[in-house]
Amino acid sequence: MKMSKKNSKNYLEFVPIRKIERFSEENGVITLEIENKGVFNRVAQKLLKKPKISYIHLDEMGSFVWPLIDGERNITDIGVFVKEHFGEKAEPLYERLAKYFKVLEGYGFVEFKK
Image (cartoon, rainbow, N blue to C red; front, side):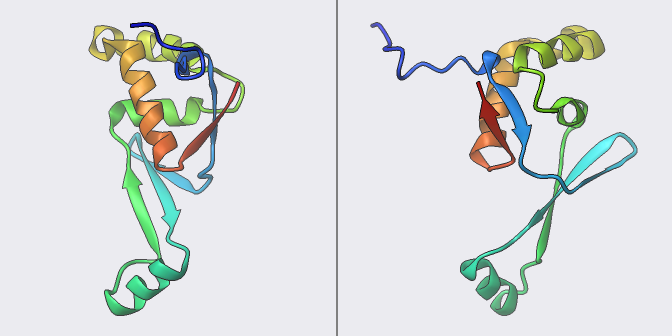
């Protein structure tokens, strides 16, 4: 079955741009700080005692990749750094990176430019 060009995305050519600028690093672990905005979140904060800021702790590879997202490097370029740092531990490298960036995009943490 052939896929049309409209439906196929090559994430490796995309350049990720961080949409979350508030983050911290401690002992090599990056923690993203996400402000919970909006009407639903305000209600949940008042009624259910939900926090105003959520903290997302990235794993070892995510903490290595996050600072490399600079709006200039595409995912293939980032993969070169990951391969140098993690070696065989990163395999299957580009499949993992593509999936990782799809997840980051889905949560609204990054966006892409071509």
